[in-house]
Length: 92
Image (cartoon, rainbow, N blue to C red; front, side):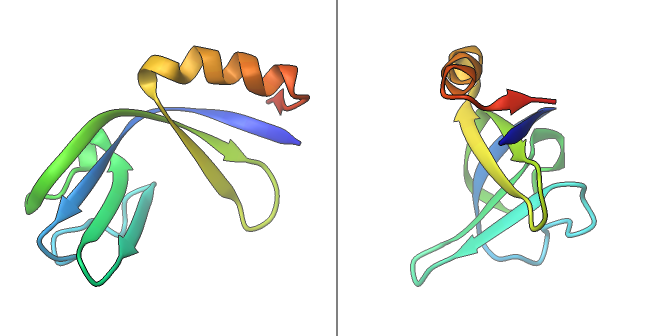
């Protein structure tokens, strides 16, 4: 399986509502439950109606159709690359 390292820094945010989320941003992942609305976005694209946020995330793209992503804390990024390579993943 091929993975691509994404250079951007990401943040995980809890938002009041989705009205201020920039859906035109290159990366924007939205989750909603009965208790909260969450967004994963590039740190420079954080919406202005954030209730809580956690910065310091990096991401890998799983290459293929209907692409998925893997998030890891920035502090663990190099170790994650090492472990994934040892498991047979290739970075492009």
